[in-house]
Amino acid sequence: MGSPEFSAGTSPVTGVAPAGEFAHSVADDSVLIERAQAGDRAAFEVLVHRYDRQVLRLALNVLGSAEDAQDVYQEAFLKIFRNLPRFRFECAFYTWVYRIVTNICLDHLRRRRSHPEDQPPSPRADSRTTERNPTLSTISSALKSGAKLKPPFARSPPASA
Image 1 (cartoon, rainbow, N blue to C red):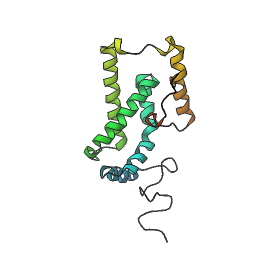
Image 2 (spheres, rainbow, N blue to C red):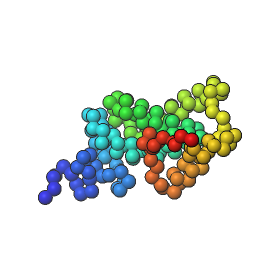
Image 3 (cartoon, one colour):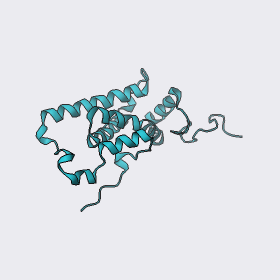
Image 4 (cartoon, rainbow, N blue to C red):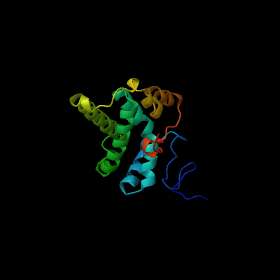
């Protein structure tokens, strides 16, 4: 007979349904958040997997650049990880994540406007750039098709020419 604290379909590591297999609830998020706040990296990883597509989609919609969206994605999850102990359950976790991602995007846009000379040339100007980096349409179509994207920080570096 199974342990009473875990129901069928839940992970013994996190105690909640695995990401993508069942619809997750606010209660599932709360358990994961509390465990992540206590230092459980596996619980934080489940949260990342639950929200990674929404974070990337939001950044892509706000910035319009796949490369910038990937940068914001990494910065957002780093900021979420560092500030998770400050999350107080006064709002939904996604609301908190959304605010963090939006603020990072706005900061990114402000930097882009204030220092246009620091921006890389448009990918259309250099065909080699589009060959090495994923394009906006590639990421957008992957998100629409439901394909699971590998987080940018987990990808291997591009091969040197």
